[in-house]
Length: 487
Image (spheres, rainbow, N blue to C red):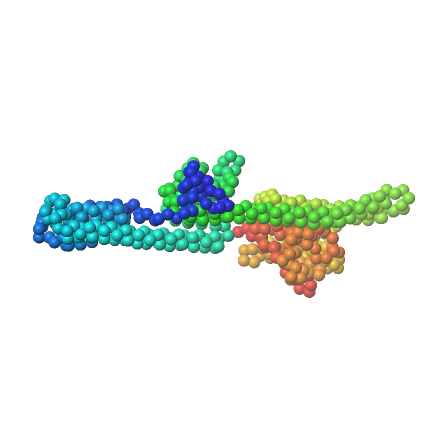
């Protein structure tokens, strides 16, 4: 087989178009070679046996008996081996009957007109019966092949309908239907061939490894190794090739859809980031600049306490900027898969203290309630500190000044539950599913890019920890981080 036009799904063979067109026109079905050989062998053996019997019997055998015996052998041979072995039996039967049964014996002369007529009628009848039996056998073979084709096409349709990606199953079914040693779909990329699907073995690695090759798409081919498919079966082969081409096209479209979805998501994040950054980063910078410009103004009358308050507020805004930039960097690492975990025994109280200290002046709104008897947890200390810092910062921003947030922990069934409790407005149940997505903010009064919980969830998953949202008794939200305890 040469190439195949994927649009017509019709394989073309060799250099001539006649073979290709033969696949369109279904010719007469030929009996299997094995049946023809069996028919020929039966013809030779049957003729030898009958002729030996009639030769030994001589004049005791009636011509009608001999002719009926040869006619029965003709019918049996036609049913098994087709027309040509049966015609051979008919002609040989006439010759043997004339030589051994009709007078004068052992001569080709027939004196009796009745005997001559009997021989002629027998030969005509035998040939007609041979033709009819052969036609019936061929039609039976054609019906059997049509049934096999229908079964193969039905399985082909079922495979395509039942599979999201039917490429592997199609190749396996193709190999089974045509009894091939191996079948594979290859694609050429950068001058080398890549195996997309394979059944049987050893798997062809390049088109030259197969006995037949069909082009499915430019750069993609179907490679077959094994007996050549008969021309009358090329219709099934063309159907398989067409479905394989469709499967490859679907793979390409799905890959493009995934890339387009990724680009759309990246564009959405970029738009959201620019929108948020334009407000949440520029506002503290503008505030810091205004305060410092006021301090440097010679006409402004600030006493020492005022300057101290301004510097304190500016430091708080710097801490806020530092947290925002840190979350942006953490989000970027999570999206690119550049988060590396170095798990080791970590003391939770020390990590929690570092997380609170990193909040700057907001640390005054945090109440650490961690027992001294807590066992160490298995985690990356730096990543765990980032998770707690984001959870605590989120709790501080949503808690009223009169109700500091709390950090609690206890051990349950070999796991440590770390709870960050706030007394703010809480998070409605219908919004908890999206609370961990980037740029999600409960309201517009607490500031921030809406990255804290998204970064906390991503880093928690990197630590193989579980992060969930619950209600605080009396109002508020409780973030629960479940960690592994060192044995």
